[in-house]
Length: 428
Image (cartoon, rainbow, N blue to C red):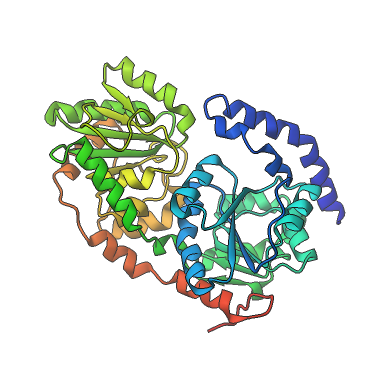
């Protein structure tokens, strides 16, 4: 172990109690955070020895981005098992909703030397795919020690992130050297990874895997059932993945919308369901009639309410499929936005605030095609939603996605290129 990684491991060991304290704190409103703590330290059952593709997807967004890759690998390699690790309960719920028991699942352990050794010893992956830019020095070094090739997929590195990583350039360079391939999104990302010390021969721009999103037929079916239950004649809009500071604006916008569309229904989905109580209090303070999704089974009589608060895990795509228009949150506050391709794939008009630095390239491409309406407050949000509710669903979103697909095919080509134990960046 290098001295840099030794210092990192010592610091992380000292901080681990705080990590568990944070889980306990979050568990006050979401009990799932208090479950399966042993997995966070690598204490998991021993998995049977089989060819195993390990995919790490932190949370909901990464799980959805990895879905097409997982399904393709399952189809092409029925003799392999797939292990998916997540970090959050929301990611775990999304995974189970999409794949049931057809994949193995545990939480990724904290990046402690002993924990990652236990993880590898008990799961024995053949190859690993790490979604997005997750750089874990001990996890990666142990994979290299065990000759487990790792691929960093859909790798993105903003200018701000690069400046942060540059402060630990030595450790970061060591970590990047453990990877067999960095499948970056574009040439800018390639340049930034190389600037941090990555081997230029192991970094390649393959595109953005999020464009290869496929909406499962079951998602559309569940959306149709919800719509029937809520009332097919009603206008329904969704405010998805909202953050503190946005909920107030969304609720104020809904008041304005109901002034013109009295029967309009808002599906309000906070990014973190544990905030449901706080959001419910905001709605009640404005005199709005609210029902919680957790109290509404997918069957039975029609629902009469002004707002449904989505306080459950793994159902966001279903409720996109229920809606006529979508506001994508994290964009009216300084969070940087969330993935707008999911509602787009379902034919919805997409509305967003202007703070979208996390998805700047995607939004720029959408703007060029007239596929996003920009808002900056409750007044403009209400106006845009009213226009969108009178706009029929369109195939233009699917056409847009089709134009940008291809990353999955290129990524699979690299994964298939070498039947031995290494990814091959020189594949056709």
